[in-house]
Image 1 (spheres, rainbow, N blue to C red):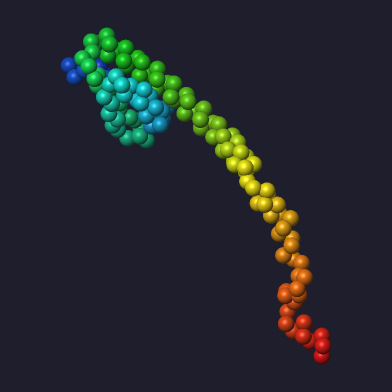
Image 2 (spheres, rainbow, N blue to C red):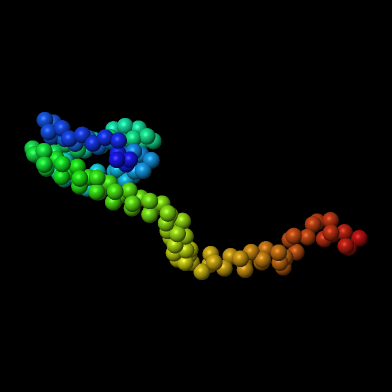
Amino acid sequence: MGYMKKVKIDKTKNQIIVTVDSKLYPLEAVYGASYVFLDRAYLRLDGNPKKEISVILKGKKELTEKQLGKLKDEFLNELLNYGLRYKISESNKKIREYVVGKALFSTMPPEIEETEEKDEDWQKDDLGIAVPWEEKYEKGK
């Protein structure tokens, strides 16, 4: 049981307490797994997200010990599901950022894409404005 430090089923309080190791299941994965159970249980998160997180699931209706055990097993499966989703999301982060960046860049108006060609126009001085005053008027002397 390396992924969780403690699982406690308390029939008298109609609740389950699952203590999860944050190194294996980050807070985002715990949030995702917990969200799935909002319709069936009241949830409370406690602990230090850098070390361990305690998830308290209290049944919205009175549950038998067998039903509490099933709720615990379903929560642990959902925790595994969201933990894996989080890991995949993190490993694909750079690819997603590249694809979104490329998509946004392709929607830019043509004027913005052509700025490289227009940047060279500043070097042309058709009106002679860029010529220093001394050079412009000392030629006549």
